[in-house]
Picture 1: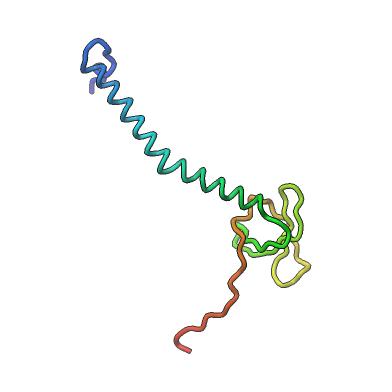
Picture 2: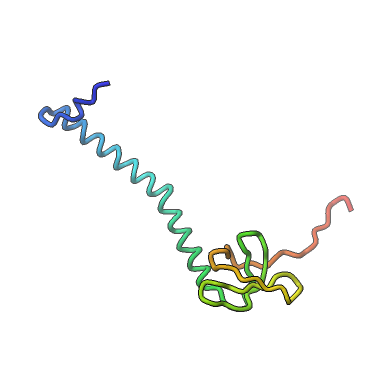
Length: 113
């Protein structure tokens, strides 16, 4: 393959080849931005807003899949009370909280019964 025609600036075909390549790379970057980078940054901002809005008494879901209730906050550490036993308190970083949610403890009966 000969890439020299792309580098030639003197002729009309070489200049248009460079311009075409730049436009192609620009379009590819724009596509990647709108498909991958922009939604990820939006999701990250929403998660940070959620984690900063956590207050005492909120029920939360941790990244490990554990539900708990916030009983205290100290800087970036949240003390979470787990289960029905009120003496189990675990310090968790705010980044470990993925949503405000309460567990669904309703019993679903199967159709066979």
